[in-house]
Length: 357
Image (cartoon, rainbow, N blue to C red):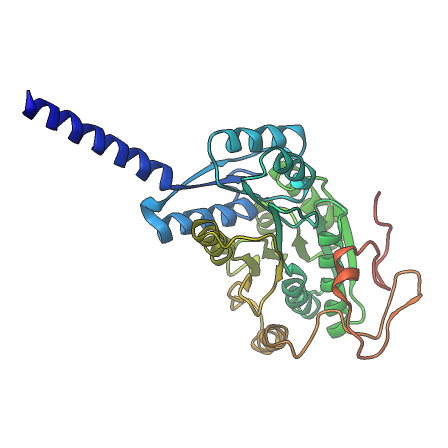
């Protein structure tokens, strides 16, 4: 009888310990706008999630939901994650901003991190990368390598993040080639291979021999490869399967260090609401290997620009610069402030066409 009681007590202690261990595990959720296999934006965010697992092992549990539309569905997914015990939720697309704020109000003990937005709360941080620095490098290569002097750009949505990228690429293409023109097609999607391929084909038909994209699939790379003599750049991920041509370089989003640091902050109780906007220097933006399809002198010029952006000796938006309507924006040597960049809603001088509403 005594022995049986001891066994029962031991079992109860073991059960309590197991329950405590389960409770101690930090649960981290990720909400993705595209599929994890998109080869671009969501693929890189999911690599960050996997890095969290590799870093903390059985101290964490991660969950994710992919291909979540921006809107009511996002709010439903976030709510479900919170109800299922998530301690920290990363919401990884601009259109998740208001849903994140709405759900965070209902779950004040859950920490939220929203990518590329600007609305914070006591339990909501925001984070983004200075992708426009990478666009400056791409613009330099594009301006040097175009033979038609027409560069095509596939835009996702006309939000400041995308407009900044277009302006930065154009400014730096024009610096090395005053005759370059940009043609912009708006796809109104982050990820839709068919729409992205169609946009690339339209731009190529209009004479573009360089295609830049702010959409997430590899479809523009495939369209350029089929056309021949058109160069492209990987978006968000390396897309190196298309190297050395048409993909001659890329912007790579490196989220892993941030995701690891913010998860650790939840674990050790030091998490606070912050706004993070890092670039090449901090390692959040990487430049993919520049392929041998790029002449050596152009590669050297692009890498020198990358280094200057990284060490802070050069800013991608440095005057003199005018707005599209010809009005003065930045004087000689003046650099753009973060507030203007964060809300950018205008093209710089030389870009044709209007920004859609």
